[in-house]
Amino acid sequence: MSFPIAKLSFWGVRGSTPTVDPATWRYGGNTPCLELIAPDGTQFILDCGTGLRMLGSRWVGPNGSRTAETHILVTHYHWDHIQGLPFFAPLYVENNEFHFYSFRSKFLGRDSLKQVFEAQMALPYFPVDLSAMSAKRTFRELAGGESFAIRDSKITARWLNHPQGSLGYRFETPAGTIVYATDNEPGNPELDKSLRELAEGADILINDAQYTPEQLATTRRGWGHSSWLEGVRLAREAGVKTLVLFHHDPDSTDRMVDNLLRQARDQFESVFAASEGMVMSLDGKSHVDIHLPGTRTALRREAQFRALVSGTTADGQRFEEETVVRDLSLQGALIVLNHSPKLQSELQVTMETPGDEGVRSMRLRGYVVRIENDKEKGHSSVGVVFTD
Image (cartoon, rainbow, N blue to C red):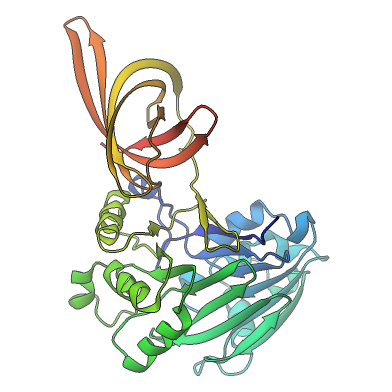
């Protein structure tokens, strides 16, 4: 018996401004853009940050076609959520059709999203104007509290607490419920209640986690963002199954995001930090399958190092295991284990390195980015990126 599948792909996860710092490459530096393929094949795009360019460069329309009727929902008009639009190649293809949704801004008035399109492509900000985009485009204004259906999916929009306004979206599909609630600051009782209702019982909640709890209480108060701690509280109160930390601060290195994720997992079992290339699938049985991208290209060599690996399994149990590292790069390793560690968890890898002065131990700290389970052989091939 087959079950409906919804697939959520992360093309941009950074907040405020893109980053190209090598210290942020593992989670990624593009600003917000997600792609949701509903079980009926309907394609949704959530926000149009610089990640939209990456999506466009690998474009395949719904149902594998090269033409598309796609629905694009924009949370708000801040630069990091719209700056990918002029660079989205499918907008320049005549056969494509895009339906845009967002709210009427009190600062812009009627046709707010269309005005945003025109303004950022106007002279002298961009070399060509909107007329260069030959794809069909429609624009629909939404209000907080509004619900509507697109084929088999029900979409609900709710206001979030963010300067100049922002919308959160709830997608109810035959495969499960996904809530996208970025750019929200807790503290407004009415909007906090609205967000809890939006997130109620969601299988996946993508929640703003740009700041630490300490920053949110002091220097970043009023800036319109949230923290991992507030996300955990919301997930508990709303009965969310899986929480995704999103909209990483441009000053947060991979190690800093790792630390935020570690703290969140101490208080809520199913938490992941959004990373570029991450894909989450819902199967209609409240099961979330997650795939993380492999490491960046690096010089790889076959190896034969004895190693002691310790970490945490997917069900939260600590383990320690002796194994052999057979594939090694300058960035990471492929390790065969009998245990199956949790994605985005940390491993301690101690390898024996023979040399002129005898065998020495080399202790490394790694981060799990890929797991391939071989049920017949009873082991897992675990891809690790070394962080220390």
